[in-house]
Length: 70
Image (cartoon, rainbow, N blue to C red):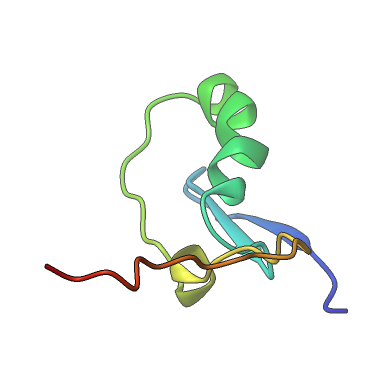
């Protein structure tokens, strides 16, 4: 299992960069929203490839279809 990480970089000009690593789907937004509010106005948001991945739900899924087509 990959390690889930939130990385913050504070530059000399005071700007903060936040990077969420190995957190699939929209869970990254849930993890960071409270702190983003406290940090202040958001200048830019860029989604990584992890954002577009579906989280592993560890569930069995049964697909059903209708055999009768009229």
